[in-house]
Length: 200
Length: 295
Image (cartoon, rainbow over all chains, first blue to last red; front, side, top):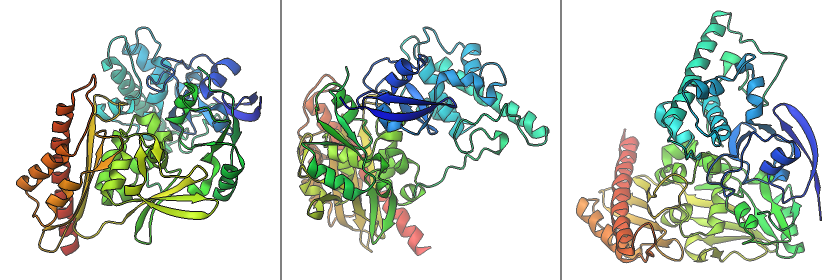
């Protein structure tokens, strides 16, 4: 049985692991690193409960082998409270789910939150339609998506307010302890550039 | 379920990958993995070795060069979706990309992988067929260019040799007065197409259709060209009547299977409608090109 040594940086912390190539990223995260916030729902790539952000992009961690994430920066729901935008409490997206009743059973929530983070990282002011498209790979079977959409809108508004406060403060958002999420132009406060660009 | 154990190889060049293809016993190529990973886990595929292309930087491109749009084997659906070049010049590609699977899967899945998978319900093969595209393969004997028309054999089976890998997909860059579009019917995000139609038309200076390509999704054992519909369009001026006839001919050439989502006659009807809508969009886009050229 062959194994490989890999390095995963999860929520800013670097881990060295020895894994079988067949180990899925979700299993490495849950079983090897004991970060059980990311869930396994369908186990087939449909439900999105295992969504994590890898190098700035939302992916389904049940559709990627851990060896493929070697050297990557991974963000999971456990890292959200340590994010500079959380300001010592809940991250605005988490706060949104609390305030807007964005969950019932909570099973889909970690995936929804990470999909929501990927949406807002790319586009801080998404339309309702853009939010719905952005979470279209995530299933909620409790009730529907209305409050989940509202939760992400709440976060978008909250982050805007924080940005304005920071801008009034001389354009420098405060970051704690030099945390970087590893994504370019992500944790830089108001200087975030969301112009996109071509892919050549 | 876990995959059966396999050796994981990560070549950094195409040459290395090709040597591995030759040296290893029945290896499988992993690109985006959005179909392959579940297949491995359900043990529908049980290779001893997986050749992972993701570290081969030379395969990660999307560009126009030498009269062709070139899509490297590591270009992801999202690259097409977010490309200004595609949005500007390749209507069918721009239409198809956001309709593939869901955002997370589009971040990982590749266009070439989808073509190699050759699922007749996949979207890209239809687009490639409509554009007279080509598949560029590399094997121990060097490079081979396979016309899309000769690539698809059966569901999940292509004319790619066992020791060959796809390095690039390509289609001719748009001519003046060219327009293309893709329309797809699916029940919800993440589902495969119930039916889909990719269309490319080129008009001559008088506005008559000079070239027509139509590729259909989910209506046969492979993605297929609607050749009767294509022929009916050549020499016609774009019109509702001409498009209606083409839609009917495309439906007649379709052989969809009845399933829990709809019976065959319903899907044929949808092929007709989707083809007409795609033709209308393509014609409009061809017209816009005319305006841009004369302005």
